[in-house]
Image (cartoon, rainbow, N blue to C red; front, side, top):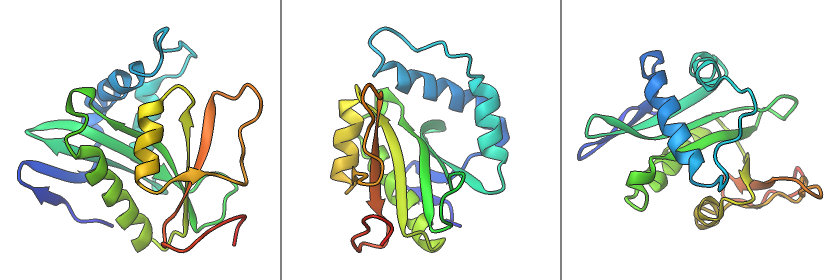
Length: 173
């Protein structure tokens, strides 16, 4: 488990249940930036989803707190049916008002350090096809298209993979 990281006025730490409203609000602001027609109303209860993510004993929600406000968050765990050395980054968001301030890079670094400490070899995620900003960010961090999960025709997400160990990981090697 990572320790709280303090850099000037920025702390990266595990989120706590009392912060769920702030997390839901940041999540909505960030998602709204890549849905040109507005956030889809798919019936997801995001308050309940984030409460579950924070409470999961097999997952983690990290948050970046800067100047007393949550400015970034990441949620990850082993996905259903995956090998124990694989972790999925389910959510990764930075407050749009704080983009290009280093928050995303610092949070990503904290995630990778956590995954390495937990013995993870591979990280996976899916990113919305319209979210070009996030795709560019992930590419800069070393994520590549997942060769085992190419997008299906009409899919709205791209599957990416990161080798956590720094060694090439293709096709389960």
